[in-house]
Length: 228
Image (tube, rainbow, N blue to C red; front, side, top):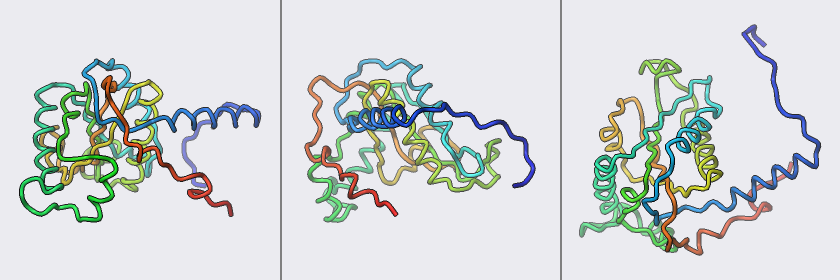
């Protein structure tokens, strides 16, 4: 390999039994995560959000350019602006404006068991919205000109680590992806070389929150993995 500055690789040494136990315990905890669409306005400490974003920021990325930005929204005015813009797009998506739905019949049928519609009250009720942006350019210096690499893959991994950390902290989450999402760049004041990827809604579930039974159907290990 090419010469480069390097540090020793460190990782705790675990016996097989402990490694298996840890992996299974974490898998069990993560399997309990469910998307929540009914939030309370109970506060979540800012420190929880900071820790989760710090974890996300440690994700692997192409050339270590870390091509992500997390815009954390807590003000009622900004949450209201996001909800209004998102619901306008959602009404077009679901065909709630009297026009044909932008989503095709097959897509709408797939969403049917989840009970979703154009109304998104959680965008205002939940204490925090984390708007995730993918930086197509910027590099570590975020200069807006340096090319970034494997952006979608890198940001996807970071979002997974963000959700896992928030779940470990005992808060509910929802990934919301209105289409198109260009308005998020304007509302959050981000540069045009960043692409909005998703809104992560963060808070505590409402006392009467429910989960669609369909959401509990997960493919078994035998279906999602092959051993070669």
